[in-house]
Amino acid sequence: MVKGKNIILGVTASIAIYKACDIIRRLRSEGFSVTVVLTPEAEEFIKPVLFQGLSGNKVYCGLFDGPEAWEIEHVSLAENADLVLIAPATANIIGKIASGICDDLLTCVCCATKAPILISPAMNENMFKNRITQDNIKKLKSLGFRFVEPIKGRLACGKVGVGCLAEVEDIVKEVKRVIK
Image: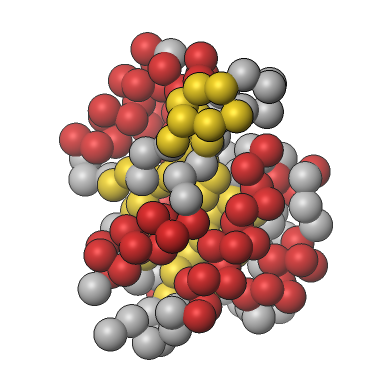
């Protein structure tokens, strides 16, 4: 039973960002509460108000945005999470997490949480297959991070290759499997 489980959905600046809207809708239909944390770059693609409307919760963006009540947001978000899902996840966010870099709200939440972290990459095939990206993924997997692998499809560059965000149904199925 997942009713009442809290999911932090980290959204990064991938062209697949529009699929995060479907992920929110599907997770909510399964009974999850979804709180969105946008990277600053993701805000260039979609305004936070859309995610707020879909999730029914406040959307968090900046690391130093003034809280409505005193709280250390990255810590309180991390402590209240039953799962952190990053979808879509760029090579940038994967690299920062693997390196322990905490320079935005999402990376700080990932560093502060004890909840499982599930990452669903979406990027150009060359970026996904890059040795550094693959080493970062391998490192994160060795540390207990879970992944929903990207699939083959038409990429933003127009080529067909591996790097498309996994199907929403597959991501939701993995969330349910991890969170039980």
